[in-house]
Length: 88
Image 1 (cartoon, helix red, strand yellow):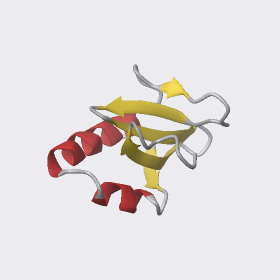
Image 2 (cartoon, helix red, strand yellow; image 1 turned 90 degrees about the vertical axis):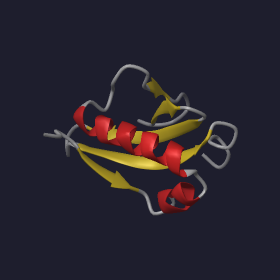
Image 3 (cartoon, helix red, strand yellow; image 1 turned 120 degrees about the horizontal axis):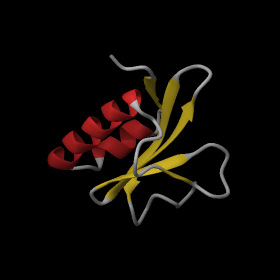
Image 4 (cartoon, helix red, strand yellow; image 1 turned 120 degrees about the vertical axis):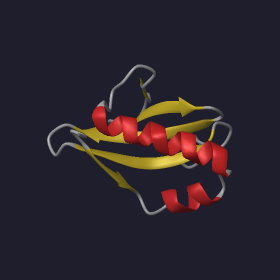
């Protein structure tokens, strides 16, 4: 049973449309794993941001913010590694 709920920013839907099916399945598996352990191995805090972390899935980065008080993980971006830091 997941200890955290997962929420998506509205812009993430647009990010998902740009990702192929195989990669998308792996990304969703990793997002589900974040619900159990948001700061798992491989999670790196982004410098210069307040509470944002990233985790890599293949050539894609999942940028998210865990909130311990409300037990929620908010997914901000799911983008290719070459595009993820633009407009962050």
